[in-house]
Length: 449
Image (cartoon, rainbow, N blue to C red; front, side, top):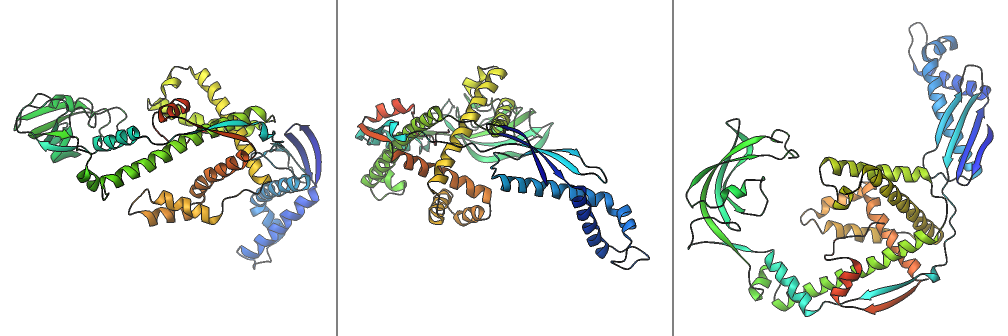
């Protein structure tokens, strides 16, 4: 194998590789001999088929197979001999592959860049410390009560109004025929909740108990059922009773209904969860600031091939969001050109940070052990009561899903490692101040890089 260096600039490499025709011919002949031992051709015993006939019948397919394997093996040999670490799949272009001549092809690639991590002792960050106050706990328990309203029958009013819970029977018709899934009895619906098709709930306001009504509505154009999407339908309704939603008192009885032995146990559990949430918000602020520091203070060539792949994934989601009219409000205000530029920058940032964190992890032998991974999977499985075993089996048999659990664990371990070399000071703040400084009103999950 002869290698000719064509490009060596930064992380960009290009090579032209030549494989002597004798090597190619030898591989083709050897493969044809293997084929000759296996195929059955009338008039010939296995292994006795003339080479000329084998070439005529199988030459083209064998030649194509040898080309593919030679390209792969030669490229891999090149990487090993030159100690190359490709950022993405290399681009291979065939230059010449004719009978009796050498095989010539080119390999173009970008390398994983060498990273010299900036001095982390220059990174200074303030960790915010906040604990659940009595007001925080009371607000949280009130919210729990709000989320567990109970409906009780109304006896002093017979006409519906917005906010009522109505008990109805209904049957749906499309083109004068009942459609599947459009029928229910004793169905409880909160008027104004927006849980039904647009226009449905509004038409139930102002009608009396025991009355019947025909309601005409149109299914949304993005409705999940293709047979009903964008279709006009009619529902025949019978209003059976009206109920009122009442917020329960946060007391001993309510605590027991939520699975706690006492009101004190409920408040203790709420307090612990709030403290965990505040710790999470504080950590996300520290993490965001560290990622900003790493992105700004580490200069190296970011492989454009990796950025392009990351951007393609992001842009696919953007296009789907546009199609379903679920684009973020800030994105709706931007033109396609502005969106593309914005998310190109996001893609480059993600790739750059991913390379930095991966490099730190590799150089410092940071990894996620089987026990840590198992505990994380168990925590994930606990979110699905009654299905824990199925969830565990899913992750064990799905390497890609397993990596989605491992990756954030390793990222957190690398962040903690880097914080050990950084200057971290603690500052006590109120919960209100914590939320202001972290830009959060609710604890809503991980902060993306």
